[in-house]
Length: 397
Image 1: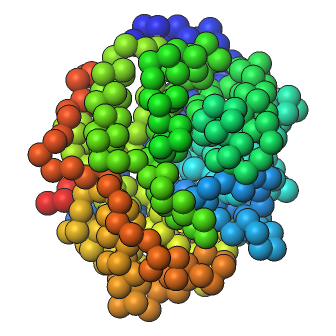
Image 2: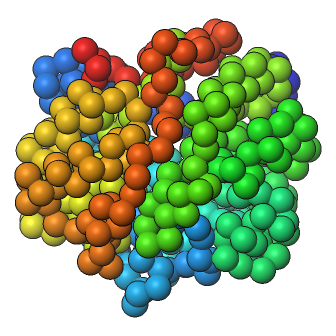
């Protein structure tokens, strides 16, 4: 797996981009996680990874989307975004996930990312608006990896994404990234309608043929005004997915990523450990993107990381979530999440004003926390990476 993956990176990506990826994402990222671990032992949580949704603008209308794409477009103020990045960098954060809506519809995106060449950015995009010019701009910057979402075969994609010819348009964007020599990933929110197509060894092989360097598998979480809970995976499907990931990782020259299990196969929640949080287009600081409640905002003049570090709301969320489950509290206990919001007088940060009603309408569904059924990682690289650079870190006692 490793020799083949290394060969692919050396022959398929631009040398300058590969060097930036290795240094900024790899070396600097691992150092920021080590700093987080050291601080967390003393009860101080300074996240090494920060996820920022910069706009509600989007050209698609996906099932289960929590972003207020139907309302008037809202962009995070460019100067606020610039300040967030600077504050986080000063605190040792080296990696940022940039989300939307569709982040490539944000008017000054590359201008702002270009001011922060010492950081590395993962761009969560549907890929349909990645033109040759856009891919070349990411190549010029050198510190951006596009993560393109594919949500099923051509028929399923149009249903899931609320668009026309979405699959082919996303593949065209992926092709443009490959032509530009970018380190490129593909993400999938696995649900009942795409599970059989994408949880297959043939799918991994096809992604390698298309020039994809890493796959990131998510588990579909019912959320937003159209939660579509019938798409949620069954307990058996989630367990099958875990087994599939462990089996496939040593076999293919591609990184296969998840954000759900540690090296021993125990379930994880990044927000419960404090390793990452989310800032939405309105400037609200949230535990994670689909948990749209907040008691903290970036626009009160304080440094963003200091505000996260000192937040009683985020501290209490870590305690509540880690005591209730090692998995996803949205899926397992939405009623507890609603009660937590009421106890803390948290405000609805969705932009729709309907989040708490949506939360009350959700019913528990299976999650990735399945005690007694843990499947440990078998590949030494993934075991080391998950133990030292990913998630858990004492959150669960």
